[in-house]
Length: 230
Image (tube, rainbow, N blue to C red; front, side, top):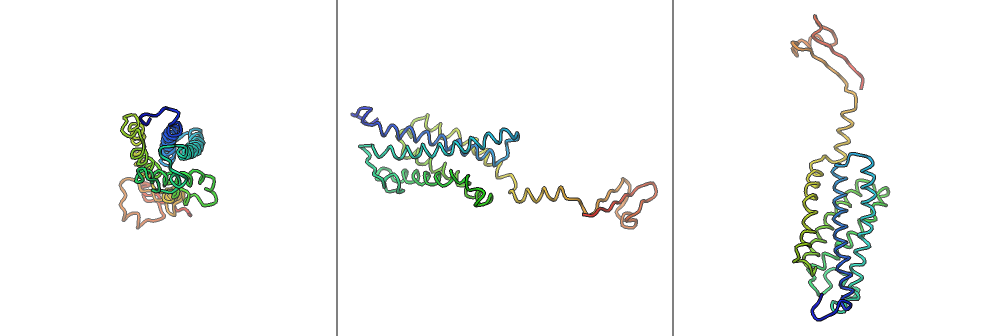
């Protein structure tokens, strides 16, 4: 609260402050759920469906919180941002180096949140590339929160930012270690497709014996060769 002013005079600022914190929490949850799905840590089908539904609703609710966060500032008599101050990056005179990234993060969230409904039209590969920007949205939100927020020095707010970063780093590492979907699909096809030749050598048989007796069974059954059509 600004010194010498009552709580009602700062009502709009308080609303913006609260909704901004809610938006950061929701964006963090959305990123965590997205990384969990991308890293394939969810095995049970029911858990996957539940997380997909929650991910969708959390992302849309975050958009609402972001809209309230910006719109509430229009009523702040001290800041007086004007419409351009909450919509144009770096146009606001108050800490523009930190409010600018916040506005950019808001636009990215607006772009990425509803993109789920366009997944079939733009294709899964393009959608995944586009959706990977959600991590940048979180980073810009953190920069905005710690740089422009009035509670940036408070331990509870720093903890709110730092705690999700730990599982995010872990899930991101798992995701980066996983092969790309196209590579994984190619490997799966290679593993399931029948081989052109299946050769079984029994102990004690040399490779030269196999070459000399291809397609036959040697004395004592040391060699068994089966040809299969792919």
